[in-house]
Image (cartoon, rainbow, N blue to C red):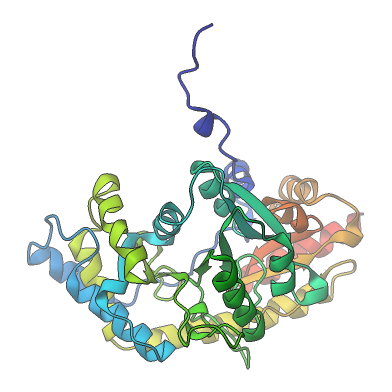
Length: 394
């Protein structure tokens, strides 16, 4: 028997239904699209200028695998202040976006056969990354009854002696929720008790609205008397993509204890060598420059969220909990009686409206659609008009 040319891992890699819907929508070039999770702003001028200046100064050669010292120091300084704990440059690894940061975080914590607990629904690439390592993804449902917040008690119920890591995502894509500090403290205590690592995807950490309070896993202490004063069994993943409208610059990072971070530079050498120096100089400018553009972007998303909530909740059969963060609306469509993929397909084919089915984010996402409100008011209104038209045609 001839051996397959394709490895079992690659042949069985879980396909993303987000990408599947994205590709389907390409056949409808005039469709209104509420699909892509990307800011509709351009990168602020002072950040672009720093990148251009770096190129003009010939910063186009290889740089250190873990990131240029200036950027690692800037990230360490920012998060030392935010988290009120000492973060050194050696605690920071610069990566090609948050996805490579997740790759590193799993590479240093998960061995073949290990279990990784993930929320359901959640960003589908979590599942793929665990699969790539030969790990076993263990899903924990996150429900509307709990305001779409991952609960420590559900994580506790999923822990076994094979649990190597728990991935949390707060603020959440696709749910728009922010975890409660009490649950984070309990998960930290569980990590200390059972010896697993908490991998915290925090790429939307500055995109929080109203009186919602975001707490990083790095800010908590385990809620047990025996626990250390400073919890360090974590890897916090960040990115410049959403905060600074820098998706195409592909600059992310991961922060953790030095024993986690040090091997990542070796892994980077074998993957991509280093993120371009001129991109990193632009990232330094993002952190150290004015933050007014960030405030303006967040305020704009908050305003458009209100429009989305008002329009969606006025449509018969639909309901939407007001998102506390991100730029995603997680819309309950269960009363319409169609599975989410079929509904998304019909909306595209019959009403020229592109959405993402909730099932793309896991089995618990069935009965929902994810809509982005990082689009213009006109686009939101047109999309909601088409949802109303679909409801009227049923």
